[in-house]
Image (cartoon, rainbow, N blue to C red):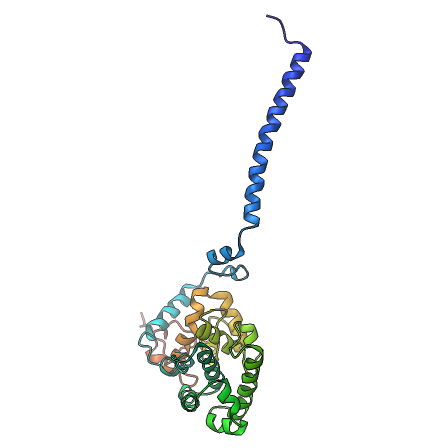
Length: 291
């Protein structure tokens, strides 16, 4: 049997090289095709598949066992849902039978009136407004001083009457008679801050963009030792960093009711609180028996 010549060897090597190159070129288009599909995937489908926008998928730190226990205890104490906020909170004051734009406008008014005002007073003022027709047109038809009289004794009722009418003009001229659909735009309205904006997004648009932090929420989470902050806005930022997103919607109403009934601003009723032994601010800790 004759030995392969140098020319034959080179030809075989060249053929093998061509075959190898051919197999690589077959794989490359498949890889590129997959990348292309992924790159041009519909952004709408991506949003629908992801429950939380990408910018909000930051990692939430693990909560301490004490915090979880305190939170569970508050939920137990609020199971009856019989606090003023449950019966007369802003989510209860708009007319559910009104057309959607009017309903959302009334939700906004209720929140604007609620600042520095007890729920009972806010509810009474909203009742007076609704009796006379509560929509953008009727609000703008009032002389400012007459609107203020209708709002009295709501806290800062004269200033709120001015803010409400200015807001009504903005909504009529810039939002087709509706309210803005983002917390950022809501905060640009006269007299509307982050707390109102985030609560309104939940009530009016069924969207959760952040936590509504009022004086009750701010006071209670600091008393419990969850955070140490000086203002409600600082508290909002800290809470959004530490709490799972699924708790954002419920925390306001739970803690507001808890603050109205038990964790009062002055003389909190610590003796009947399930957290009395695990709250650093408790004045009724159970004394351990001497051993």
